Image 1 (cartoon, rainbow, N blue to C red):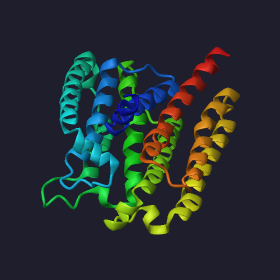
Image 2 (tube, helix red, strand yellow; image 1 turned 180 degrees about the vertical axis):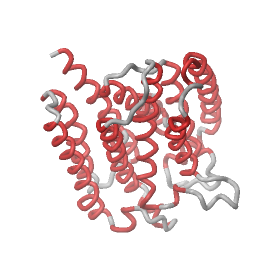
Image 3 (cartoon, rainbow, N blue to C red; image 1 turned 45 degrees about the horizontal axis):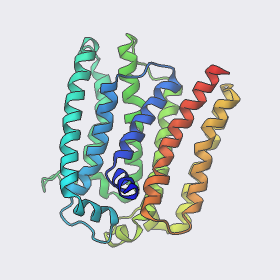
Image 4 (cartoon, helix red, strand yellow; image 1 turned 30 degrees about the vertical axis):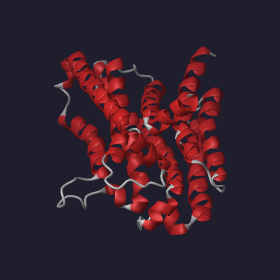
Amino acid sequence: MLSRLFRSFLFGNYFYGICAVALSVESAVQLGISLNSLAYYLVVFAATVVYYTYAYTSDANPNVNNQRSVWYMDNRGFVRFSQIILGMIFTVSLIIFIAQQQSYLFAIPFYYWLLFFIFPLTAVLYYGFQSPALRKYNLRDTGWMKPFVIGFVWAGAVSICPVIFSTLAEGKEYHLSLFKILLFIKNFMYITVLCIMFDIKDYAEDHNRQLKTFVVRVGLRKTIYSILLPLSSIGLGTFLVYAFLQHFPWIRVVMNTIPFVLLILVAYSLNERKHILYYLAVIDGLMLVKAVCGVIGMVLVVRI
């Protein structure tokens, strides 16, 4: 029973929704701004789950060798019901959020909306359009670009969007600062590395589809040792240099170093074949670890 619930939790993309909320909270805490309302985080959660589930519910030719696709075929009724409920949660929460924040939402300058909408627009282009004339505009089939597109959307959704709304709700004007840009880049690169790791799981399928992901192009070992480990090390080194220059408290440095160390260890572990649940729970779980460590680091700084 617990095993089935755990698989449903992961295969159903509910874990992604939790990670999106957690990373949004981390951004607010690290920037020292107020958290958004519960309605906002429900919108983030529901939108994330529905978005990721759409890829499997709209697949006309599911791969019977893919355990995740098989789960969706075996649980069509549950998935359809879940999508309807989450769609209702999204709609109601969005209406409540707009009603709560209407005093400033309609006064937001155009370029803020432009900055905000670039991320959902990129997310839409990732799946592409159903129209034959527009189907070529599908970022998902760009192979090597795919992890960067996903990383870009996630970084914007958890680093830019919640910060814009929270800042404006406080009656302040949103300004891009060096730290906000670095936070965006850190989330962008961190999630991009996770996406490259995830492509290792789909190596055989992507190879058959002639989708030129990194692992298809250069092979497993080069992906790990020439891409994943260097990028993870550069990310850790960049953070440590910035933390040193900004005189971060040692506890904050330690807590924010943990996710990068785990990122390196998990990248190295992919030399051996892993079960799909390893990718969904451990690799994707590094997003939640990053968020939790970031929040704890800030909380401990305040208390010490």
